[in-house]
Structure formats: structure tokens, C-alpha cells
Amino acid sequence: MHIRAATKEDLSRVYDIFMEIVNQRVYYPYDPSTPKSYIESFWVNLENTIYLAEEAGQILGAYILRPNQPAYGKHIANAAYMVSAQARGKGIGRMLGLHSLNIARKAGYHGMQFNFVVSTNENAVHLWKSIGFEVVGRAPDAFHHPEKGYVDALIMYQKL
Image 1 (cartoon, rainbow, N blue to C red):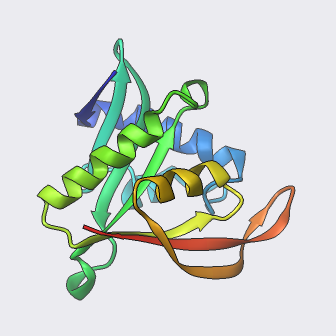
Image 2: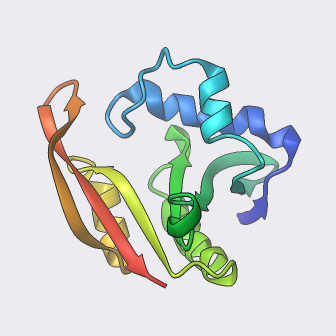
């Protein structure tokens, strides 16, 4: 398993993994009917920094790194992570998370902030805490979980 920078040729597979996760309706707030053009303009494009976890030529996961806000907020990084369903439980999320923190430091970011971690995504919350993130805010009932109803979204942060 190795992590490498994405190329233009990889973007369709990154989009497929992103939508696989969106279609589960429990991790990201996007509706599965969100137009592909929006996802590509906002997340899956090479204007963002994108790295892939790859094994034997197969993309198993990816992360997207970009400034959290424009102008006076661009010193704080934001990231989104995705691991394909068949690759979960193998430590790929941890590898991608640690890699992204190193890339963010090298890029000169002062911190990394996750704006919307679904509180019921216990694996993600545990992972992010285990690599140094802390919960700095909570938006009550911000996510409509298909089975659990309205649940909180967490804002998580790590100073770099």
C-alpha cells in the first residue's frame, strides 16, 4: 500500500468513491442526486490537493486538502477523506489522516479544521481524536441521519 498524488486520470475513480460514500447517507451531508458538476467543482478537482491510497494499481481511498476559508482564513486547512467500502478496517483512513497532516504542515497551514463530522460516525470521531484532533464545537441536530433522525455535527480542530 502506498500513498501518491492524484492525477487527472484518477479523478473519475475518486469521484466514484466519494459518491459511494455519499450514497450511504450517513457520513456526508450531500444528497446522492447532487449534480456531478457541483461535486467536481467543489471537491474532486486538481485545484485541491488530492492524494490516493493505492494497492496493486487499485485506488482504495483518497483525501482532498484545501484551505478551510478564503483570504484571511486560508491559513487553516480543511480536508475530506474517503475509503471504499471493501477497503475499510485496514488502517487506510489513519494512513490518509496522518499523511494529510504532514502535507498540511509542509504547505504552511497553521491548523486543520473539520467543519462537519457526523457525531454518529463513531469510527471517524475516534480516529480523529486518536491522531490529535479535538472537538471544538457542536452543531445540534445538523445532520439528518436516515435511521437515527437528527444528530449533531462536530467541528474538530488540530493546531499544526
